[in-house]
Image (cartoon, rainbow, N blue to C red; front, side, top):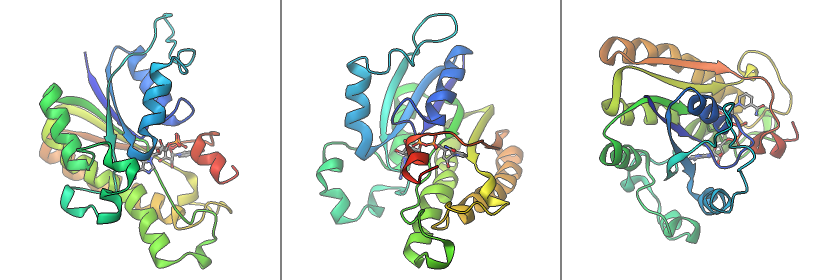
Length: 229
Ligand code: NAD
């Protein structure tokens, strides 16, 4: 069977969870990367059976998540983590959550994967129109929503089996004006789409790994509710 790592699952409402279920239904082993500040709630909810109804697969069995890795995809390696995050109590309880370290942990635990899914985004100023977005807000949106994919792919490529596949999720706001999708999030999705073409060229030729992005329709995930979608 195939093994999938899905980055960006912290509840049972988002695309990451739905993709995990589809892959599990198709027989894949599921590993997930969960944003560090959301880790405790996600793991305890899983343990307490809060997601059991949503874990039901078409054959009646429950999706198993083999392992949950803490992840913060805006940090590539420990050297990049600033002091205030290191000492933040929501982070201090977890370790090895930078992208490089997560890839190393997955390698240590399982050796390789076949499918990498990026289902995460964050734009701290998403509620502000682009004209009112600060430089920091814009760069943070690109860092969390676009570069995070480059970083994940770069660090996971050595453990993705040839013929493997990687996927991210984009949104139509990259091409058309969607008022309310601000803070540089429209820019971040445009970058993600352009990067997908370039990364497909590079990872395809060099490593025989496919790179795709799916422009998903609107879904009332936690992220979407936060911006009133
Ligand atoms: P979601 O809230 O389920 O998923 C986003 C996840 O990103 C959350 O689990 C969050 O904890 C995680 N995250 C945020 N910052 C992170 C970081 N620095 N490191 C690691 N994880 C981090 O919401 P969703 O809407 O399912 O989003 C998944 C993907 O789908 C995103 O790329 C989003 O832009 C895209 N998308 C969503 C919609 C929609 O309508 N919901 C439409 C098109 C595309």
